[in-house]
Length: 117
Image 1 (tube, rainbow, N blue to C red):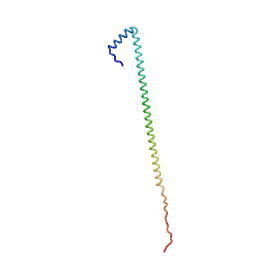
Image 2: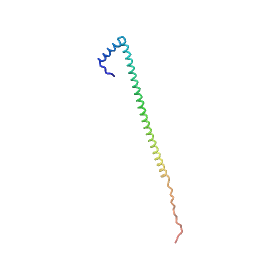
Image 3: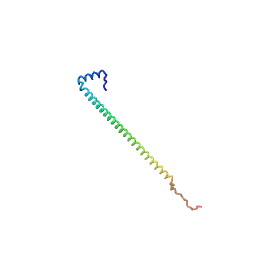
Image 4: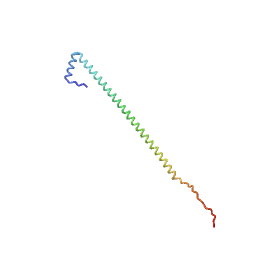
């Protein structure tokens, strides 16, 4: 996080020893350590919450995409079924037309049997 070199750290410790005093320095160091640990845990918790929220949002987007694809597939299956039904009706009509003999309405003309001689 911060870039401290060893000499800088020694200077900070000496100033803290002079300002705080040798009796209270261990207690202050312990308190600072606890506060640093709490801050670190808080930051890690926030990071975990953010990553969890991002994962949930990604799953929602994925779910929306899957639902859209499923609806698209469902619609295409319905279209194919409708086309197949129409073709089946056409085939059935053609088969019915071929299987029934056609009635001819042709009128046979007969000549009178009057011999004209």
